[in-house]
Image 1: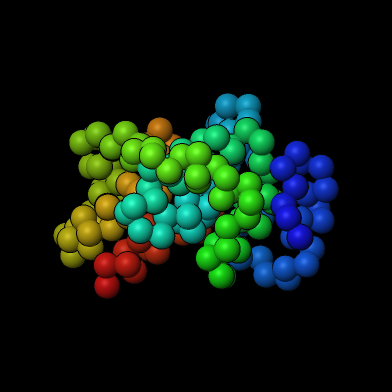
Image 2: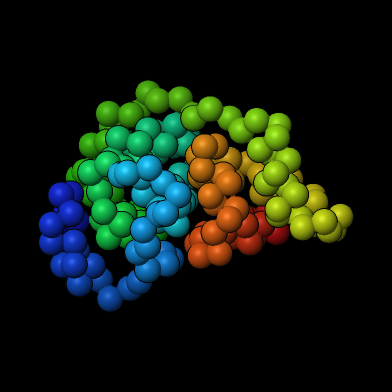
Length: 168
């Protein structure tokens, strides 16, 4: 079953999977502009899409192109398929092909890197080196303009702990 791209029938989009994946239940972003996806499904989608450093640019480009036309349920279906079997839907595959030459998104500023490191380590010198290690993955999957929203959310999957686990 392919995910709905118009938002219609999105209740049916996850009916056959029986696996909630790693995403929190759909929420509406209060801070986001109209059409902007909530940060939770966006980060889960990006984490599943960015299999290695070579896909960072195409995944960010594809997410930007698809964001206005997809529902949270559509992204849940994409994320479940990518995480479970590395299966890309036709919509996502098409967007990735269109974006294959896209470079990585603008890097985080020094202030953004420091903000992430401070939030990650929470004042612990012991966590500082792990947080520095996790910074690369965080920059790959969190758009710079949404970092504050990511750090403010308590429902992110993956979250900072998941990024830290990649460094252990």
